[in-house]
Amino acid sequence: EHPEWFIAIAPENNSEVVESLSEYLAGAIPLNEKQLGLRSYFTTKGPRGPLRIAHGADKHFPPWIDTAQLDLSNSVLQAKFLGILDTLLSLTNGGGVRVDMAHLTLKDHVNSFWHHEMAEEFWPKVFSSLRAKYPTAIFMAEAYDHVEGPLQGLGFDLTYDSYLYGILLRGEH
Image (cartoon, rainbow, N blue to C red; front, side, top):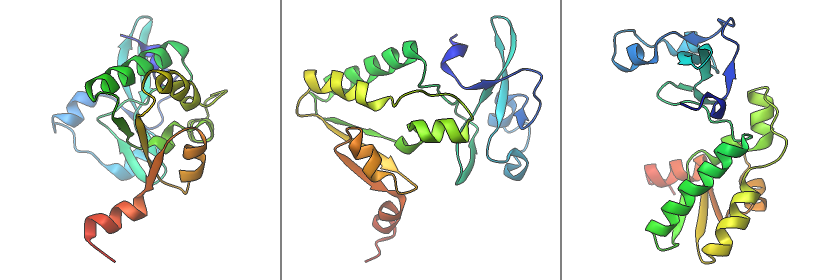
């Protein structure tokens, strides 16, 4: 419905394209993660013809084929995202929100991994708006690649990295 909210490539670019996301999800086509590489795209119908939209991805894992990569440089999407976070906070009486894979929303990641132009960070706008309405809310971010400090610098109260999470899951000391 809103193709401009996603990172996409030109329809004629056939590299790393998953032709039918629904066929993969239904199991009709086997998923070969090695063929996908770090980035992959699926084809969908757009208002002016076919679109190739990126799956969510990060350099440590194969693409998540059940996702589509949001383009947080889009101001309309930013407003929508802010509204969703506002709703979540209202449901928790301003308690807080945990952001999964928050490091993938950083400008440096978007610009280098997706070769996309994101001019400014997304989170400072979010926090300035939401903290005025929910001053006691806690914002927690999952982080990889040692970007806990930058995420806290953008306004997250707490961050945890995959290393710590792994230790907690495995019960290691």
